[in-house]
Image (cartoon, rainbow, N blue to C red; front, side):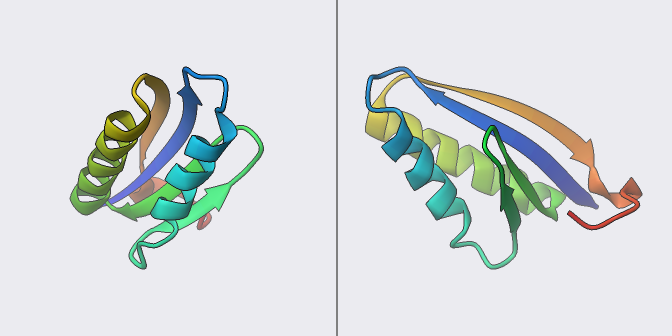
Length: 85
């Protein structure tokens, strides 16, 4: 089963761009994920359980490093997608 996740990150500090870019850069290191970034969100596509695990690990890493940050996520069963992300 495939997962498509749309994520927006909102660090609660004045220097918000570097933590967002670092999170996106880390997601792009995973060869088994397809990552598409726009101005307001990042879409990640991959196998369901491994993708959920990677997202959980990377969100935790961000929280540990920068403290408070809001992640707004939408999850979709990617098996039903007509086109590839």
